[in-house]
Image 1: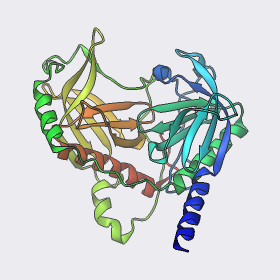
Image 2 (image 1 turned 30 degrees about the vertical axis):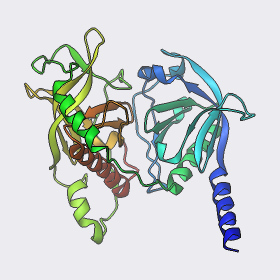
Image 3 (image 1 turned 180 degrees about the horizontal axis):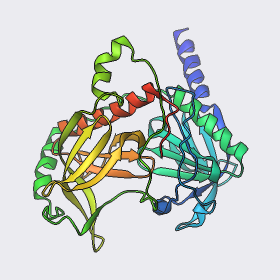
Length: 336
């Protein structure tokens, strides 16, 4: 009888995971050409803690953004409770790609362009719907998916021997660039915006801080007086003038409002990332990178490398906590 109950429970779990939330044909832009994104006029990004929509106001975009700088192909896309997958056609014979629940971080809808951005742990997927009705169905389906998904526990612990080797490699790697040269490189990002944004946020609706969480929000509350959460040396992935990729040393500071990136040698400000635009921070897995992580924003993802495993974990936890605090406290905040 116990076996029968276990089998029933297994079938129930499989059926639940296979439930289709939304499916349709979507036009997918090639991931290798993400850098040609043009900002849209309005966008919606998900807040798993609330059903309220956030509708940022952005510079007017082009309905032809899919035609700029890359190829696109139509796929049959299916969002189930247990995965997101897309296929060459509706027969669903063989999936082109399958993304598990833990791989889906967030999404953004750009109604003016019928555009859907889905942020995953390793890339940003960009789709275009045929019409507003299809786009709305995907928005509702993804919102339900994020509200209901239960991430599986994952540890950032690495093999101690590999971590020790990595610590030594950071200082001795031949890819390191001269820290005194602040002019002939750029930080590598998945997307480079063509237009500047106004960083001023409009009015936000702030939830009351729960009594039991006051210690957490004392550190990460975005409305508290500005204070430093973490700072230190990070190596950022950069591209030299001739296209060679390297790691460059930066002085990085995380406060409750932004991530500040400065030159380690001159102190010159290189980049400021407002935390309202951060989607998530994830560990980057790879054979030759054991202390790497990526900061994912709505427009780009930046790759960093810490000096050791402990610092990597601290950066990931603190950045994730900043994102979580905003999701729980802020409803309907606008980002420009």
